[in-house]
Length: 165
Ligand code: RP5
Image 1 (tube, rainbow, N blue to C red):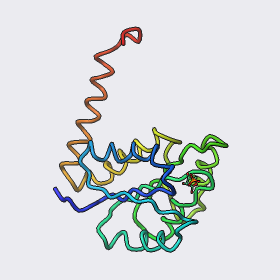
Image 2: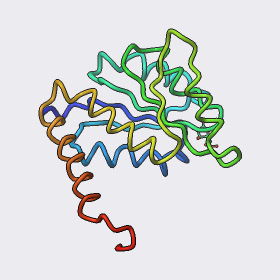
Image 3: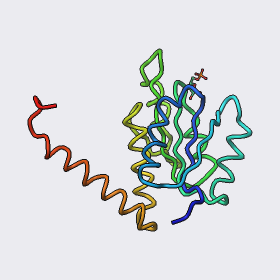
């Protein structure tokens, strides 16, 4: 298994880490090699262009981009690469993340961003989806993904009574 990062996890601000660490936690659990960076579309636009523009040649296969508010980071990253970009809407303080969701999901036809749910669920699922994209080519990731799903199923089946905690 390669140790070269295959997934680039980026976020617009340090304040997004509370949400986005759920993506990196899941990547670690599945043993998917990743890198993580703060890259802001409006505060560091040149860094964003350099990051997304060089992602493929640096060996990345998927980008997970989390942002909140006027969340243009995933869309701008997608504009600079043909790698799959998975967008995570961060739950904003003022509009609860609906602003983030609509900013990320409503990409005009031609430049897609695979948009996940708002907040923790979206961050976790972005990691799982990144693993699923890589799985056909990396048997170790495939096995980790199958095992994760199996554990999830077993946990539910082992506790059928919701009154028992
Ligand atoms: C966005 O603005 C970031 O993705 C973050 O979710 C939001 C607020 O950023 P901070 O003001 O907390 O740095 O760019």
